[in-house]
Length: 80
Length: 424
Image 1 (tube, rainbow over the protein chains, first blue to last red):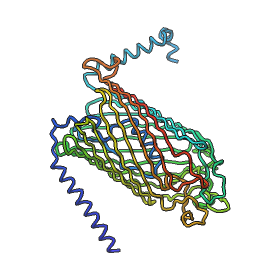
Image 2: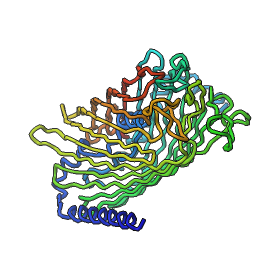
Image 3: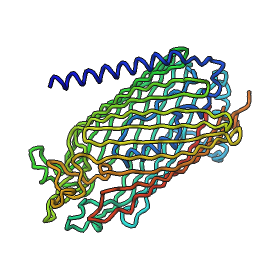
Image 4: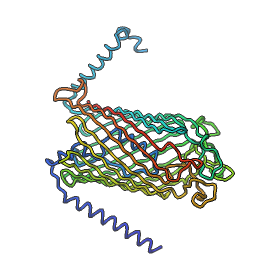
């Protein structure tokens, strides 16, 4: 039981470390506002609220045993 | 009553009344054009068809959403959606060894789900907060869903984090069995008459839903962005189909589908978008891994490409592959016999979504947008107007699922969608 707990803690720490590393690497990426013309285009958005996508996901949710992990809004347009 | 007191208006030809109303609305919107976008109206309709000789399915899915922006920082929205479902399905699930006529047990059904939603979004310089409520109702199911989400941009807006939480309180109608009744003695519904009334032959079962999600979007270069989404979901309550019986004994004995009352689900999605300048096309690739406590492991891989064919017309093509393992307790046949199709313990299911399967999807969408020139509106009313049409084809490969030993013939699905979006 103790070995299992140690294994879980190690995995959790590894996950936290990997996430921290990824977030830290994100700080190296610098796209200036004047370079965002392409990123701001609707074709580069992850969660464009399109009717066809909503209808498709609705149908797939009812045909498959898995769900979640879909898109959230964002795409680097810096529109806010 | 009020209209009858206004005979002069009542005698106006109908088109004059409508044109007057449109002119008035147009004037009102023109007066507010200085505040840029005031409202957005989305009207859509989807058509889902699953052809089959015995158990075809047709779903018409109209929806409308109106979003109003009374100030720069606040958006308020309300919407309506319906699922008009008609078709036939097998009320009894049996497998290869079942001595029951499954095919002729297919029964016709039709129902309409109505869903009403309302919500708001507060947007500040680098953050946003959203909340919404959705009420859904149909003859045998009711749902109440609350959702909140918050997001922020940082690192010069190259990094975006979004957190979401959803809570659902659903009710499903079943036959009036007691919790102490043996699952093998419970009966399936044969229709929805008497549901959510005082009918003593019907009962209402609760379903509790908790959904959590965190999303991280990152721009790496002026043409490359990625997104990682982690989702978790907890479900508790009656998680089966109240209409479906499963053959559980070689003598042909049937009982209501019996699923575990708890399910924890998790998914990790990773996707990237890259704009290839030489092709003037945005390419997207994504993968999603899914796991739940019913032992289903799912993998999804997606590719799409979108480009402007004309300045006002863009076209998207997409492809998707999905594969999943079966639920721990799923079997094509619960009547015993071969180990591969033998009993799975205290639970039994006739749900093909819990069986081992894979699917392929191919689709395309065309979207045309017309922007109004400065000082001019499209059709005298819209700041911009866009219309879309799409088609998707989904083919499912059910590896083990049979209806009395016969492979179902409703594994090809066609989905059309039409949309119209106007910004006032």
